[in-house]
Image (tube, rainbow, N blue to C red; front, side, top):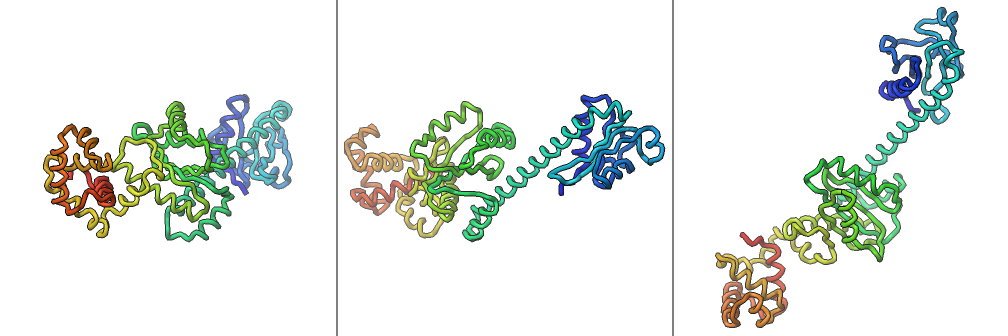
Length: 369
């Protein structure tokens, strides 16, 4: 059963007394005054309220009756109900003949405020439960069966296929207000799940739409002032297990984008799958061995010329003429540089797989290293 607290009780009093020229008291389920326009009466027992609680009915008290009761003044006292449960008493001080016309209106307003507070509390609890579920989504130690059971308990339903998105918010503005503004704007879309991941991140799980235009969505977000700095998008997923894998993959994609494409606002996993996979393993012994030939080249490239040449060579698929033109050098100069790269790396540049090895490796080693 809902219990009245002093904060809510005083809020009811203040709202009512802003309109009515009569003192208002709110008593809890034990008959103690926990909200009043008269501070001297706070935390005192109201015997008239106890009569209301005992009989679950309106009690009117005139001057003569008030003289026989402790802590009571003339007025009308009404039971406060929530979900048909008696949670307290509302009292209006004054001659019952004068205040009676206001009594039911004030009680109705008070019960609406109680209901509003309860709805807010339930929403807060639901948000807290959802946040906990999302944290479990990113925790591989939590079994999928546990995740599924908790989703069912919360009433979360997923129609597959779906897509996971990660939103980064701008650094300039206050993060909580930014999140609240965005969440308020997207509230009400039942098929879309939104949850904060941190001060400046949100998870967005949405149905897959063939007409989805994320570039246009970002433009709309800018126009509405939602403060979205970057949108990262996964592939479509068909199950809760895939949903977790996609969410974790977006973390790797995010790290890759921050390192290699900091200015890119729309980042799709589909377009950066292999570089993301390699970037996530960039510190592993196995991948370091794969990068060793490229590191040999860069160790002898103090002015960055060999790296620039190799990047152009890979970008032009090994086409000598177009690569030389892009670099603004003679074909013989290009050949000399390529021979030097092949000598230092031990890699045969005419082979596509070797060029791919060096090309992908360039994306894993910062230019200034």
